[in-house]
Amino acid sequence: LKPKRGRPYLWHVNGDLTDASPSNLEWRDVPQTRKGHRPRMLKMSENARRARLYSIWTRARQRCKNPAATQYEGYGGRGIEFDPSWDDFQTFYDWAVQAGFDDGLEIDRIDNDGPYSPENCRWVTKRENTNNRRNTLYVTAFGETKAVTYWGDDPRAVVSGKVIHSRIRAGWDAESAITVEPFKRGDSRERRAKRSAVRSGLQRAA
Image 1 (cartoon, one colour):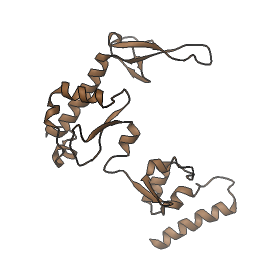
Image 2: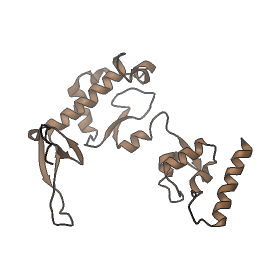
Image 3: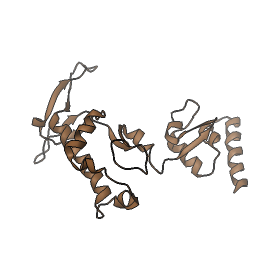
């Protein structure tokens, strides 16, 4: 990418943009595109990996130990501890690498009421991390219970996880929230009648 005047270069690092110095990054080729252009991507070097892990380590310690930190109330303020052995960054770094840290993964506490510790932490995708939060909505339907975002991927779902979430909050029963299609122009009478029946039931329940 060419920079605008007075601005630094931006570099692609595993799909993200960064203004990090290219001296801390290593090149690797990626498959050729349809137009015959072969772009190049960057993967994290040892220095870049240490820098990202240091940032993760610092933020986690701040959340647990610094009352002035923005997120302290939801972590240290409610008893979430930071394992003393991790006060040494190198110890945390060694654990992270051994536990499978990779670019694009986030640190996640298995037990949301437990500490940041080797026994209670793992590396997961952003989506997995989102589904393991205290405010995650779990929905039971068809004899199964799972996070509402995963219901959006279910083959029985005709709407997205966000729509299912809003419907549940509005009082819909779980299976209707998942299987009732939204209003569309030209819908058949049967589909309109099904949605109307669901809404009528909600109004009577209210």
